[in-house]
Length: 263
Image 1 (cartoon, rainbow, N blue to C red):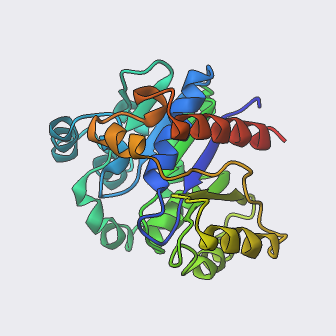
Image 2 (image 1 turned 135 degrees about the vertical axis):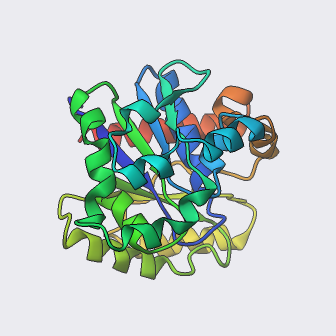
């Protein structure tokens, strides 16, 4: 890969493990020697909380060094980058004020491309191998903005009875976005919160086998208490407990993503 690739992690259903997957794939890429920029596009701040304490995140959210402030001013995002404690891994934090971003973008000229413009200088610089964006669990103007700024899309899906609910709406929305950003493509779906003992997991796998147009990553992420402990410690599980099953799975998923993205 000879240029920066921007990947959006999105699902219109909450609780899919989207932020956890984004943070751990990013951290695993950084551990593999790739330079990674994470962008927290969600007012829930979960991606930011994956690397900083609650006090630090709330301080950044209340100040002027966050994505909300930059988008409002339509500024180059370079000055909003915050280094994490991990080598090769930086973050642009979010703000709780992102809840009003849809309204504020509504009257802007070419509003679908504001984030793309704000990221352009960073992307053109080639400093980062990957930019990973955590999108909020909605379908609207802001998520469209994120998708228009992305090259690829990864959709985390919870392996549960409700996990696939609304997935058709997600793909319909993606097709709409492709009308204005035809170069956007779905890299694949990754199953999260998997319990291989349950029949529903097998049913979910069978369902995706009947959907040949959708790439399902070979690696899936099983339920693991280490993930919850890592979140409590404001650290990705691949750094918090490298020997855990989930850390190994996220390392393997990151390898798959990098391999698939280099095609």
